[in-house]
Image 1: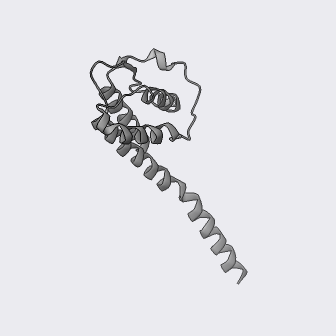
Image 2: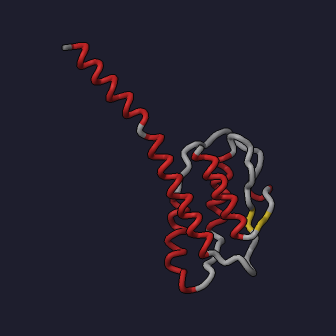
Image 3: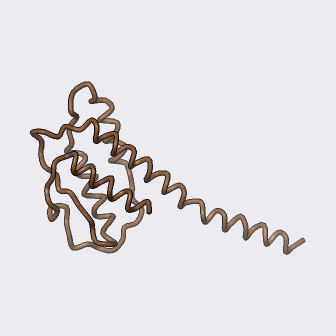
Length: 133
C-alpha cells in the first residue's frame, strides 16, 4: 500500500512538472495571433520607423522581445474605425511577459535597424515562432 501511494505521488508530481510547457506554447501562439491581427490594422505610411531586432543572438531573445514591446507603443492605427481594437491589441502585447531572461546582451534596441511598422511586426512574429519551436 505504501508503494502505491509513493507511485501515485511521483506520477502526480511528474505530470505537474510537464504542465507549464503547453501553457507557454499556447500563450505564445495567442501572442502570435495578436501580432497578426495588429498587422492588418497598423498604419504603415508616413510613420516613425522602429528599431527591429532580427535574428537576435541566442540568449538575447528577452532583450529582443523587450525592444518589440517598446516599439509597439509607437504604432498607430490605420484609421479611426479600428482604433478601439487596435488599442486593446496593443494592451495585450504590452502585458505579455517573456519568462526567459537569458544572458545579458551587448546589443540595445537602438543598435537594430529601423523598419516600417508592418516589417517590424513581421519580425516580431518571426521571433515568437522561433520561441515556440
